[in-house]
Length: 199
Ligand SMILES: CC(C)(COP(=O)(O)OP(=O)(O)OC[C@H]1O[C@@H](n2cnc3c(N)ncnc32)[C@H](O)[C@@H]1O)[C@@H](O)C(=O)NCCC(=O)NCCS
Ligand SMILES: Nc1ncnc2c1ncn2[C@@H]1O[C@H](COP(=O)(O)OP(=O)(O)OP(=O)(O)O)[C@@H](O)[C@H]1O
Image (cartoon, rainbow, N blue to C red; front, side):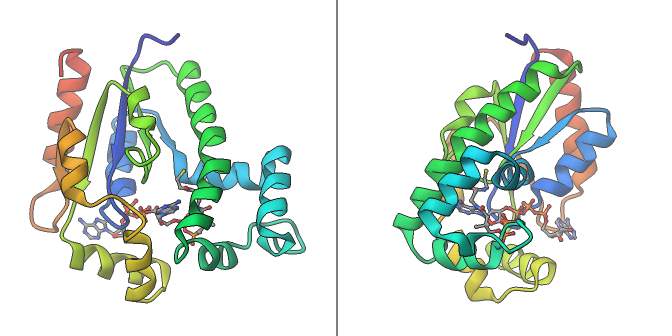
């Protein structure tokens, strides 16, 4: 088992997790992006691909084998039961990949970025969790711009995630990404604490 301090970074859609993790990464900290890894596994892990095809049909994949994200998003983000099924297939595989990744790292500490750290229960595998927060309206605006989707589509995903207040109760640290408070000093402060070994 790795003795490294393990930090989870989470936050609702559009809160700015990826932006913050990029800053940690520039400081030399290895970052595992669970959402990206989940997508990679959904096309590269044969058992997972077979299970997704069996559950969601061949339309879940394009003819070239890439994931039909728009189709799957349409299937799951307005249907809680379907989303639960997809999560039950993907999350255990992605969580295992994260644990294997941690064992390979040599660094003062490691970071796992995941939108659903609390919802999936995987926060328990980390020593500390950072919650990234931002006002709802700003998050919607950011994602509409980033992904070219409608406010309704962003809200459908938000409704499948825990409300921020619930996450605050379980988080050890909070980074405010409201476009007003500067991000870099907040990240530097946490980096200092994690490197000290006594956060
Ligand atoms: C349905 C899929 C194909 C849609 O892909 P798409 O490229 O449109 O969105 P993307 O994956 O980039 O997600 C954007 C954001 O939506 C939110 N989101 C993604 N998956 C979920 C989910 N299962 N529940 C709630 N919110 C989610 C997150 O905030 C995420 O960062 C994809 O989200 C997916 O496979 N989700 C299920 C696996 C999963 O839970 N992944 C994320 C955590 S490991
Ligand atoms: N402080 C900021 N100032 C300006 N733009 C920002 C800021 N923070 C984030 N953004 C932008 O908002 C969008 C959402 O940020 P990001 O992708 O980091 O969020 P996320 O929490 O990782 O979202 P998701 O859960 O969808 O993966 C991105 O396009 C990003 O560049």
